[in-house]
Length: 176
Image (tube, rainbow, N blue to C red; front, side, top):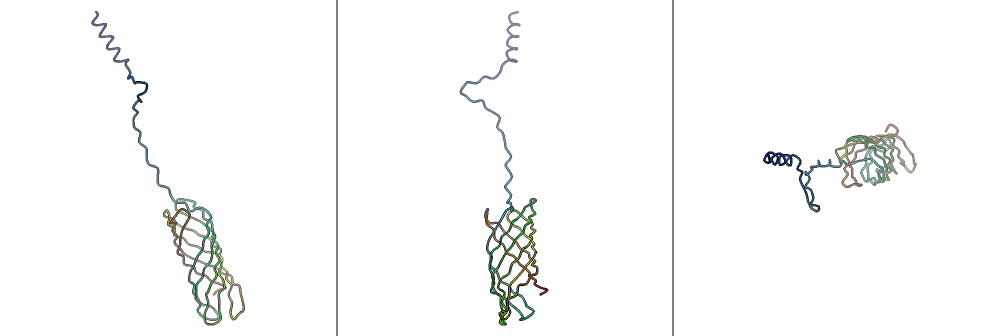
C-alpha cells in the first residue's frame, strides 16, 4: 500500500510541479522578431524660394530675332496629395539681357503658374503653365505685354531642403 501511495504522490508532484527561478536570475523570455519599418518617402509639400539663371531667345514683330541671358527669383508652394502626385503654384521674376542689333530690349519677364508633377521619391517630372508678362523697349519706348507661359521640367531634391531643376519655358505675348 505504501508503494501505491508513494507512486500516487510522485505522479501528482509531476503534474503540479512548476519551474522555479532564483530571485536575481532573470527568466528567459521567448525572443521576439520585429518587421523593419518602411523607408521614409520624400515629401514635396511646403513653401520654397530660390534663384534661377537661363538663356532666352525668340523673335519679335518689329526687329527680328532676340536672344540673351536672364536671371531672377522664384517663390512657390507644393502640395503632395498622394504618394506620387504633386500640385503647386509658382511665381517668378527675371531681369534679362535679351536684345538684338535693332534697339529691341526685354527688361524683365514674370510669370504666375500652376504646376503638376509626378514623383519618384526625390525626382519630379512636371508640367507648368499660366499668366506671363514682360516689359520691353523698342527704340527707347517702353511697353508692358501680357500673355501666357507653358513649360516642362525635371526637379531633383538632393538634400532635405534643397533641390535643383532644369526647365524649358515657352512664352507668348500679345499673339507674338
